[in-house]
Image (cartoon, rainbow, N blue to C red):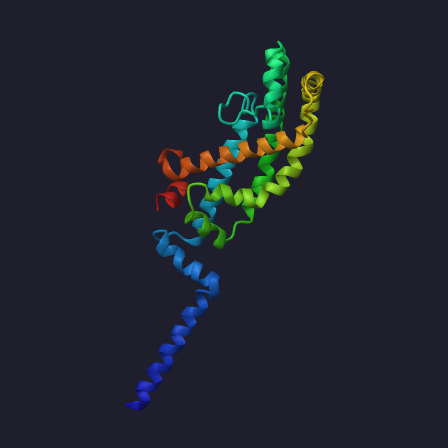
Length: 240
């Protein structure tokens, strides 16, 4: 009898060891083991593919909207206005009958941002390809903008490098630099406090802020609105 008990115990231990080995170990193992119970029986592959699809959909819709004519200019939230340090100059110039000059400068900044937004899509798609299990679980358990924040962390440097030259060229193409110089050449004639901020850097920053804001809006729709889940996989992952 003692021999039989000892043999059974050894067999159980071996079985337990095999189970642990097959499901992984350490942090990755815990993530893999927890994901099915957390997401109602979804496989890890479904979770990751669903997140990739959601990010791809959100980034594509967001950048497509902003890269069209008036994507920035006619959006009350995202429209790029004069930098804070130039607001006083704007008011002074408008009071002197130079409002049209200021309007042209503002329009040209928004046109440059719309032009640059086209550069974002391939950079986002490249970042989305690299999503791991750990990334996926963090995004799923995060807030309404967890996926957008993930993209921002992974792409902000590359996007800044890609946007800056496009915006510089766009500013020249739509005569923004000329309008800007005209605005502040006139203003500086009457003011002891000269204004000369880096226009390209300012528009680049505002353009990126707008892009991530718009993607965040798309992500929130997918999380909260079943109608925004355009595919069966999105419906399955986010319904859980």
